[in-house]
Length: 150
Image: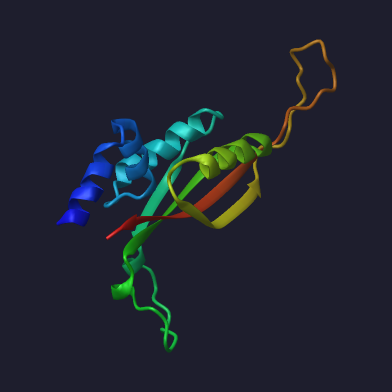
């Protein structure tokens, strides 16, 4: 009881903003809609749009044969889901998006990335700078894994 009171007193010293940041870092549930909206907000800053979103839980994926002595899924104190989406952007904007994702409080692992060339650069015909080329756009398919406490 003394330990419980001590921990509760320490918990109560955190501000609401700090508790919100902590719940983003270590959520106790997954909110698929909030996750997609957060990613879309982040992408919008760089002129990108999140498209073709698919979400699957760890149990929905094809299971591999367990390794002898490995931790079973039941003994893990966390769960995960995989989110896949596509977007189009210049390489520079995509890198800035990934840097924002890396710096965000949400814990995600990049587990897959496919890059395909998109629209070829075009000459800026309606400007005084003849022969200047725009930066090319690429198509990206990103697969992320995020986690939460059970």
